Each structure stands twice: as structure tokens, then as C-alpha cells.
Length: 215
DNA sequence: CTTTGGATCGTCT
DNA sequence: GACGATCCAAAGG
Image (cartoon, rainbow, N blue to C red; front, top):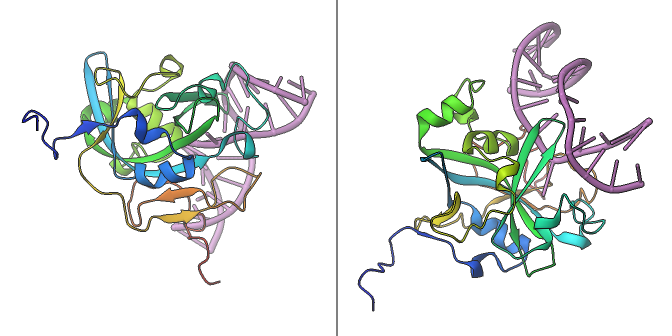
């Protein structure tokens, strides 16, 4: 074996990690580390909340009505970042999954700050508590410095601006599953996944009740 | 703690 | 012309 490759050394995820269905990739993205390096400054955070969007077959997906200039990145190869603008003022980021052309994606909805706390606080002056720095898809992008500039960024490139790292922290054996937040179409599909009990998970208490729990 | 209304503009109908 | 894969401050329990 190559002694320079130690099995427990943190390493960026390879392309193959993203090649599966979004509903399979989403839960195993939990507890991975996302890091951005912008202007020579690196911040990192542990992913604690995601949602799967299953491409053309998913009425809630931006890809449901076919390719457009906005969603072009989703229709490209897996392992890239799909960044979109919404509500006239917010950016949100997805990881493209599946095979080229399937337009599957996982929305990054919440993360626990790890490194670069001072930078995160500076980028998120309205966050009163550190648990609000990256809690929610638009806040996450604001804290990590993600905007339109990084739509299409390749996550595989170790020297890229955005990487997702496996630091050997396993995903939860049983993530909490709920309906996706803010979507009206296909509300019956429980494709939101989060780390139970983590304070950096978005949503209200009623939105965070797992599917199938007794009334 | 929860609920409510306003902000704000790119995108597609 | 209508609508968001949202956030925030304010107000009420």
C-alpha cells in the first residue's frame, strides 16, 4: 500500500460518491464536512441537514419541467455544485448526484460550524447565536460565501473553492426523515434528512417531527 | 417559545 | 404577471 494514503486521513469525496440516486446520497452526506476557500480564507462545517430532489420525476425539483438556463448545472455530471437564487435575495446550494443528465441533487440545508468561526460571524452579522450561522439553506450559503460565482464548481478538485470531506465521522445510522420544507408539490415524499438533536438543524418543531410518528 | 407579514427580483408562464 | 427548495424583526403566549 501507499504509505502516504492513510485510511483515516480526511480526504475529499470522489466522483463515485455522488453517482447514486439523490435519495441514497443524501443520508450519507450527513456528518461529512463542507469547506470553502475564498479569498485565501477557509471555513469548514459539518453537514447536519439535507434534502433530496429526484430530477425530472420529482414535481418539487427545479428540473421537473426540463432544462433551463438556471438549472443547467443540475443536468450536468455529478459532483458539481448547483447554486440558485430565490426569493429575490437568497442563494441556495445543491450537490449534483446521479448520472449525467438525470438532474438529481441534494440541497444543503444546515451545517455545524467547525473552522473559521470569526469569518462566519463576520459574514452573518444578523446571527445572534452561533447555531444560526449555517442553519437554513440560504444562511449556509451566506456563511460559506457561496453565490452565483460558484454555480457549477467541481467538488472533486482538492484545490477547488468548495470541497466535501470525509473525516471518518460516520453518518447517523438512523437520520430523522420528514417532508421537505417549503415545497408544496410532492409533499408526501419524506426526503428531508437530518441529524437528530443537532441545534444547527432548521425548521420549526412541528416541521421536525419525523414521518410515521404517532399523532 | 410560536406566528405573522414584509422584503425583493430572477425566472418561467 | 405570479411565484418562489427563505430570512428577519416584531409581536403575542
